[in-house]
Image (cartoon, rainbow, N blue to C red; front, side):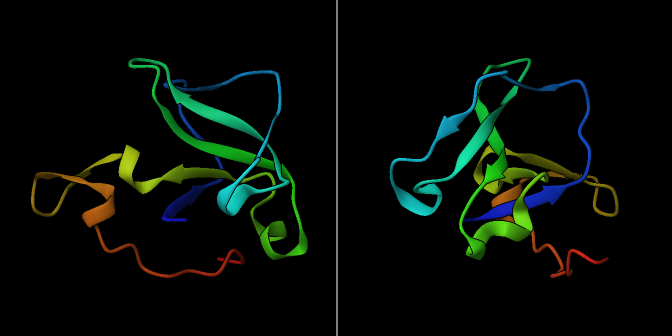
Length: 94
């Protein structure tokens, strides 16, 4: 998965009250809430509720699909797809 993580989001991101269960791919067997953009309605990520031990560190975090996000780079004053931005690797402790 190509993801970016956050502890909080703005009111522009919404999620349904009903949980989904992954039937294939990286979220196979995981329970999660789908995150959507309030403006366009597209899926932008998920909140993982239950998973195997390999994804346990993601539980409760807002996980965003990089290919669904556009970033504004302050230093360069440019708009780019998040999948093309180099995010520094951080541990969840930071």
